[in-house]
Image 1 (cartoon, rainbow, N blue to C red):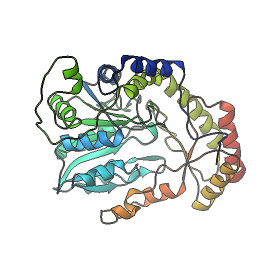
Image 2 (cartoon, one colour):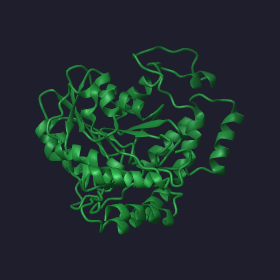
Image 3 (cartoon, rainbow, N blue to C red):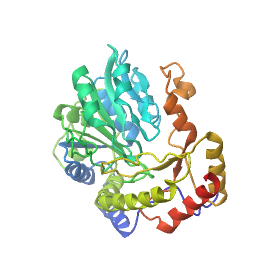
Image 4 (spheres, rainbow, N blue to C red):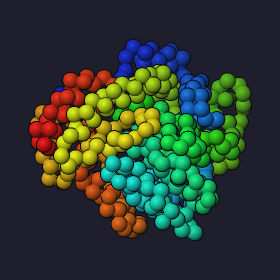
Length: 384
């Protein structure tokens, strides 16, 4: 469609973002510098975490986190079968193997701790959970398993910036925010995310050694940066690791700082719209609206409805498209991609059912309640 009446997502951008970009252009310093440093500090403070390292994108964040943990050939990483392919791709890029875990169920499409325990082998080195749609995984149970099995715990928190974990029994990590629930966490600031700068990402951790390693790896393993030499803080450098060019630039960091200030307000608006969706869709026969019983403080990154069957999903998507309402699918089942055919993907009945029946519906802070009602009306007409 050349123009969507109701797009899947939209940027919450205005004068503040324009002013931030202008400030960077006036400084005439575009590569990683003061804006990046301030963004990292403000992001870490917002999450209550010790270290935040800004990087080029979410995939770079995952790559650096895995590399810093020493993941390599012969290792296995347990991860959900329903996720964007980046986590699995970065696993394979380091010579490791992804082990794909099942969902809890269609109502809670996050990694099932019971399946996690089943999958652990002597070669398993880490678990990479993914907070689907901005709803946090069962972190108390997953943390306990990782401690007992001595596994690194990685958060793929790309959907969950601003979300806070709530445990019904107030077990640790009750009350902490996404990005502060494992050994290391990864964020994406892609254009459709709750904090959006186009590209960009962040690695967060409370482990100083890991943070230092990620900082070195993101800039070719160099001991000093161009910004340090520009300010006269260094005159030369050594290369102590085989790293990459995964740096974030000043313009995106400046945009990120503005978006961070808007984050809580934007997430609250998402929760309000999410509640309207649930009110209108909850009575549809045979449909599942995930996380209806969720008690945490979600980031509400996605609004997903699960149709009773594939045929009805297809009819609803076609009807919404006809009305110029954009939809998507988050996500196909990763082990069903051709490139992952050699990796373990047995079972996964619930994951495959989810990927065949789920519809991602429009959700963004600038969306009007009337637009939510319009989307629901089309679904109700097809799906009742």
